[in-house]
Length: 400
Length: 80
Image 1: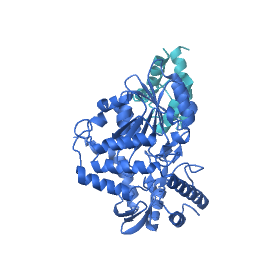
Image 2: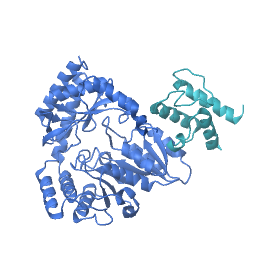
Image 3: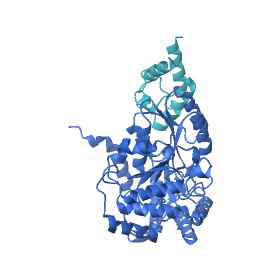
Image 4: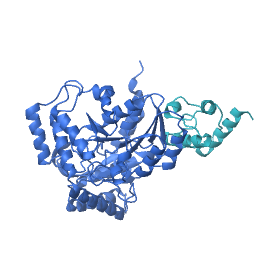
């Protein structure tokens, strides 16, 4: 018998080698208690959270929590059914209404996760003989959406406008074209030149889908994302987003002004063949989304945090993923996985949690310590964080 | 030179900057096993081939191409 697990042997070996050095497993952390959006207890130690996607700090918002409890009492713990059968409650509709208001768009469709939103929309709208042109650094859910469908998949070099244009022009006459971009790329925290890319896509007759998972609530005047900030949101055909970042719960969505959008509810398999979100989740999401509309002060404070952390880390001598802070993600580039894991552990001992990211999630084989800031990180906390980076960096020899 | 030989010559030329091991490239050379390219190298190489021949080589097509000869065949088909 061939052991089907043999293909994982190289990874098992790499993992064993890393753990044999005595380092704490970076992919097995348990948070014993969560005190707030920015603080948890890990291994009995009070830890500042700098590796969550809780950008706007909505997870403990009293209105959000109250809405969830109320829905749990009034509608029960789950729907036990698909959105197209018994799984659409008043709360799911209210959540979609909140999204339509938030984005000022005609249609909104809520999925059970952001991953499923990409899986469903991409695999359904791009059919056989259509072409999907996508940024090479696209998220796994985008690639998996491509793999689930039958379209021709053509990647282009990250954020390269010319490379996109050349490929658009080479698509055979008459074939359908879908360009897939992200507002913020989550590994390095860099943003896309959406203004130019959307213009090039439209000029070549393509529809455009933008994943704004990491920008919602924070970037753009109304928190609608990078497309809003760059003034071209009206030219984007589909925006994909998630509730598991700024919104502070779980779920995914697509908003659009396409006149035929509603038909997707009947033909999109990852929407139809799965259970809908629990009533408490859509209630917390709807409440959070409406509160995010009026969060200009929090957005401003988050920008301050991002700028300060970026400048501070740079001053300490760390190499960062972007020259300027472009989002709430600051990626610290580590020389290799072992150094990265050592630094990650040293930070945890200092009382700071960041994400250790490594290939295949990262571009160009990089190992990253990914820091994502929260609007509720106080000025003092950002100061503490910089102190911890200085101490851990010196202890591990990452900085001098 | 026939069209196919010209295509082969251009492909071999495009491989050279990525031929870190300096192996002899023939039609039977395999990209993954013989040239030992990782996915990032493949991306760079495919982008160069696409620009050189002004064609699109989708990921769907790439999945079917293992050797230099197969790439030449695919390019001949795309040009036709």
